[in-house]
Image (cartoon, rainbow, N blue to C red; front, top):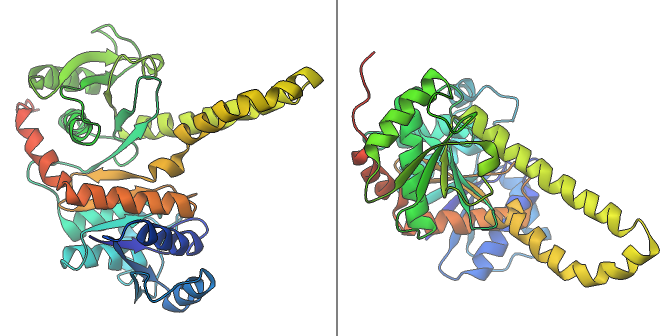
Length: 340
């Protein structure tokens, strides 16, 4: 399995991408990685990281970088030799099986959509990710790709999320909910009410539809999958990250607040360490861009080497499972959206 990595995407690029690629290939003999970016910087980074002849790493030079401040669609057109666009090109050309980037997610959406093409029946690709909960992973779609979708797109996000959950998390018939400001049928907006009708009609053997769910339901085990627009989904994702960091900060303060607490800290440290690992985004690595023809993984901009390695492994799993094709087949459950 060969994975191409946009090595100039993360906040601290290319060091995390270089070390993450080395970690990934050393842990899995079936993997090879193609790093795309400034070849001189990448070569120096590999030398500093102790690259050996046995490491299955190769380089492709790209003279441009798409930054977090670039407008996605404009950057795609204005920077044809960007590391991101060149990396996607290696997948579309058949040289690699999947692509990973921790760069500008909007630009990756544009590069993947124009460079790889959408799957049949997909109106807009969406970002699918998983949140850790006491009852298991919660699949969230869309996590940031489409801030103002139409109702038919929102319904597609739900079906894509359910198919992802069934394939990746091995749930036979996942429970799907539509995020809203209340569980009553009269709640929501015209967008959610129309999407609600489409999802209710699409439910069947592949997933059950529980209707509207509130934000407070996400971690109570009420649903396995939640559908929402990318604007709301991204806020949910970033809020969860902030709450996790904030809660650990509060716990550390309390454990240091008194002599008794400090004495008891070693007793709770192993449990806290396991919990930290469960909610650490670097363990998940990245999110799938669902709806394009090949496996595309979008990693966190703050990714370290461990997160990049996790994203590479996820991309390889998605490609091996032929996940894009399986997601496309799931859309047959949706009825046609009513014409305006």
